[in-house]
Amino acid sequence: MVTHASSKRGILHEYGERARGDGMKERSVLWVTKRYEWHAATSGYDRITRAIAGPFADRDSISYDPRSLARLMRWLVRVAIVRPKQAVRSDSYRATLDFFIRARLLTKRYRILHVTDVEAQLDLIESLKTRKLSVPIIGTCHMPPSRWQNEIRLADRLSSSFSALIVLSSSQKAYFDQRFQGRTFLIPYGVDTQYFKPDVRVRERGLCLFCGFWMRDYPTLARVIEIIHTKDPSVRFEVLIPLPGVDLAREAGLRGGDRVRVRTGVSDEELRMLYASASLLVMPLIDCTTNNTILEANASGLPSVLSDVGGVRDYADETFADFVPAGDAAAMADRVLRRLAEPESMHVRGAAARSFAQERLDWSKVAARTLEAYDECIRDWENR
Image 1 (tube, one colour):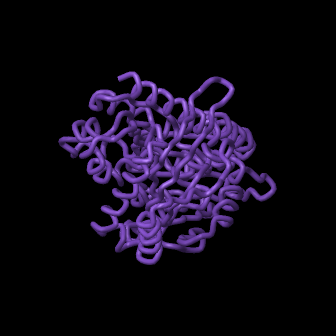
Image 2 (cartoon, one colour):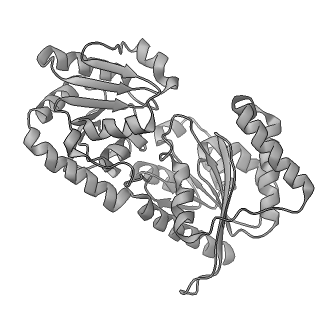
């Protein structure tokens, strides 16, 4: 079964799977997820809940008898939907969510709690751990090690709050293996390969795509575009920037023009069509664990030129991606121009990107590995 107490920013999901033929005991999971407004409807790590629950669960809503909890549920949803910004900053919101999670766990129907965004929810989980919980807590970390290194007591905070961590890249795994005392599982981020898919009929030769704002290198992108246009003015750029990145992009000198279109607020369908119609993804990055843009481009059969940072090599390989040093605009521009000059190879590289996504990054693959991690955590907890 699946239930949702949802807002744009904080969501509780629960999933129960009855006993299966392999003798597995009943597995039930309570998720605490976070939703970011700039993600497409089919994007975001919170999709793990649907990837796991969809194939196995009948989606019946669970109702609770205690009237106080029913009122609490209605208040939480109303505040989070009507005033999301205020709610997310509100101590009463956090206290309410804390109580709601604790009330769910007190039913003892759950065998594991999965916090899908550790960085956003660590304080909440630490407050939960002030009382003894009856289930293990597993968390997913999203930020690269460079973003954690200023956190002096990181290992102590994580080790005291979580039984295990899911990390999304090899660089994270190496970092947390040295600092976290519990289990770490390297499981990739996923992508909806049914929604994001190629359409060779609409490919536009010479069209480059850039998308996103989190840890994107706007100054390098501006220089790349400038260099390319001095050598080949026919190359066209679609630059998609969510609202939180608009000022940063402007400060970096990113401007629209005849061959550069800078946009924000594109629809999901426009985004999908741009992945399908572009010739090349161009992604200068400051650092990275992974990001939706790379995954969605892969699923759409779009070759890429990427900054060689963080975890990008966990999500792309040289059969379809070129890797250049971070901040090296000249090297990136050169690689882009070389690839655009070889259109006959782009179809092969695009097919390789699509295969990579289907074989390694499809949500069904990620869900299966996540369930294995749950099972290990549950066994460790029960045998402790």
